[in-house]
Length: 337
Image (cartoon, rainbow, N blue to C red; front, top):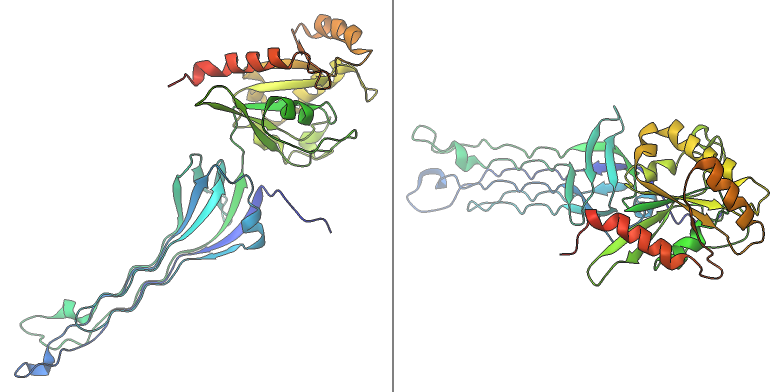
């Protein structure tokens, strides 16, 4: 069985640490009746916390280790010594991770920023020591309270990648090759469909201080929203993408019609979420180094009334123009500081 390298949905058990018990204790001093109460409080249990990390791109760690438990609080001791607070379980997750309660599918929270912390299971409070019941009429209280249990939840984590632009298109349209040409990413490239089995993200260097994140969404074919091909599992990764890049195999190298491919992909996106087609977009006419591409491009422009940017990842033609177009579309929303 092939090892999994990308996981974008996982169910976990999150257990906050139990609080420590309070202590019943009396100090031993001469001439002090019963020694006097001095039982300390128990420590608080740790929380389970999801922490956004730009260095994470998959939930695979939680897939193999889905039980997350925070540390319990220490018990109180004599001499009014409070028990140690339990350490929280800090779980790094990719940006774009959403946490839902498995029972009712309600949203617990959304981790979208690097360093953002989301508490998904709180630790229990520590119990009280007997010193709290000391009074003029109760000089030797024996009462204390136990610590409270930590919260325990079954959570479903779903990843919706956060990127500035998304490469959308049919399998083998050349999206992975385009991502390689534009960014620092090195996705798998091969001359057969469905080479890309999970979203890949690369960073296009805009200047010394800014990077544009581009995601290559696995090939979308007719019926994807109904589970055909790789299905709709990866369509959710374009929900957070504000700018679409439709990549079309303009040479029709797989025996398909470029116009039909373009319209089919748009229909699948509309069937999944109609508002996706209202977002800014550009069209890339890929594989222009092949013989049939020029004639197909003329027909494509006429039938779709679009102005695709012609490129070839083999010869490098058009890559600079595409890079400039992407930066021009992205920069107004991300001005240089």
